[in-house]
Amino acid sequence: MIGDGMDPIFDEMKKVPVCSSLSKAVSLVCGSEAVIVKKQPVHGGDANEAYKLFLSDGTTLFLKANTLSNIDFFRAESEGIAAIRSTGKIRVPTIYARGKDSSFSFLLMEYIDSGREHPDFWEKLGFDLASMHKADTVQFLSKGKYGFESNNYIGAGKQKNTPKDSWIEFFSECRLRPQFMLAEKYFDSTIIKSADRLLNNLDKFLFEPKRPSLLHGDLWSGNFMSDESGLPVLIDPAVYIGCNEADIAMTELFGGFDRRFYDAYFDNIDMVPGYEERRELYNLYHLLNHLNLFGSAYLSAVYRIIKKYVTTS
Ligand code: ADP
Image (cartoon, rainbow, N blue to C red; front, side):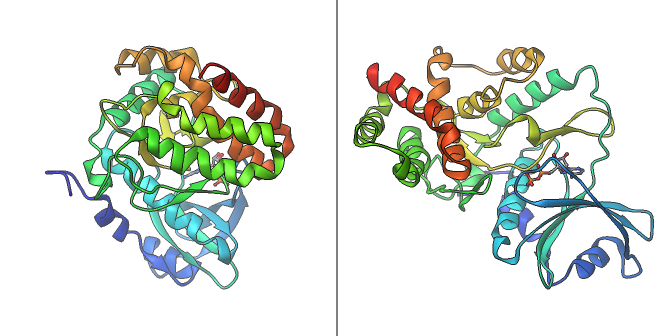
């Protein structure tokens, strides 16, 4: 069902052209005369190669590139950006085109000229994220309340978004269980039993939200930037409809954002008491994903969190 008066995201996604070469994508954006005169590597990402492109007509563009076999990353990223954009609550870069060249896949988007953070940067990020979390979500799912219309990626890991009516079931079946299954080679039989027990007792810790929220899904400090006015822009999402707490928990996973972000966020959204007790359970998903992608350095944190919740269940 499409919500009244809201832009169906799939209409917007259809507007992102899929091109059979980078030069075709560039001419589509800037006209047939425009050619790339310089390609400057941009560092800071973790899954793709990134470049600032300088064109002959003076335009700059941002290019992400990966192998041909990873082309689906860019389908997922452009859908995620389209979903966030459709809420109208927080800035994301404009996506111009995606496609395949002879030896790579690519995503071409607006180049954000990053400026020094505005004094209100953190308040605005907190306020805008709360607004996005409060936005109506009916446009994103044709059935179910949680999930997304398509699967996507969390870093380089696959993220399953099968729609469910229950948040707890979604978090169990589409978030923790697939990661537990991938991580089994790291686990002994005791921890496998504990993981099973945790999955069977999630309703003791989590709750069914009053309002589902569109989540960024991968909200760590590498996935937002400041624009030319020093104001926030979200990048590189792993969107789905879920409980807002999952996004906030992730912001705290690697040290936390500036206090002003949390003050603005919590002032603008109704939180259910007890978030702090649920935080590590949400972050277990990301730690398991890190374990599966990067190896055993994350095992002790995963063990600790599983044991913590199983002991109290
Ligand atoms: P990855 O998918 O590899 O994680 P990111 O999307 O995080 O890549 O992008 C890598 C880096 O490029 C970011 O840390 C950011 O500094 C910069 N960046 C991302 N998007 C843009 C953009 N639209 N304009 C300018 N710089 C960008």
